[in-house]
Image 1 (cartoon, rainbow, N blue to C red):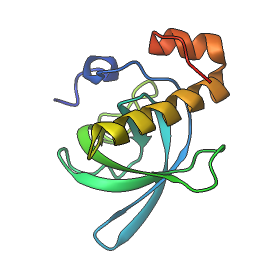
Image 2 (cartoon, helix red, strand yellow):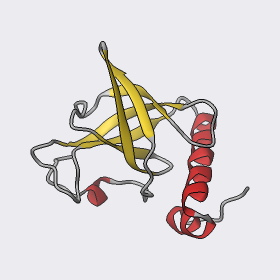
Image 3 (tube, rainbow, N blue to C red):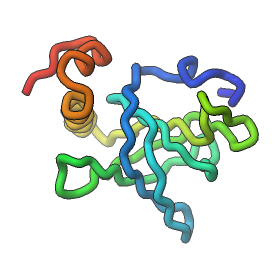
Length: 135
């Protein structure tokens, strides 16, 4: 997808504005950036050094309620370069989570749902997700 589209045009699932530390490695370089939003299916990582579209990589999300970071596989679906960035659409990359199995997908979705409830409250999380969240 081109970088001229708005982020909303590129999203499969509705995202919640949550900032989490994210760490990942590219070749021999280590990056530490922050998410700007997250959904059950992906996240946006704000960075002035986005990876190329199609890049698959492993990253670690620091979630406040978890002792260890959540390690996920992701694929860069789209980027916004620093040249195309605006205040409303910052530089970074849209990441689609990649799962090895349906069990892994469901486990990650449950973690993201709990995160949304913890950060935004039951009512807003349920509106964003379109369903009642079970404890």
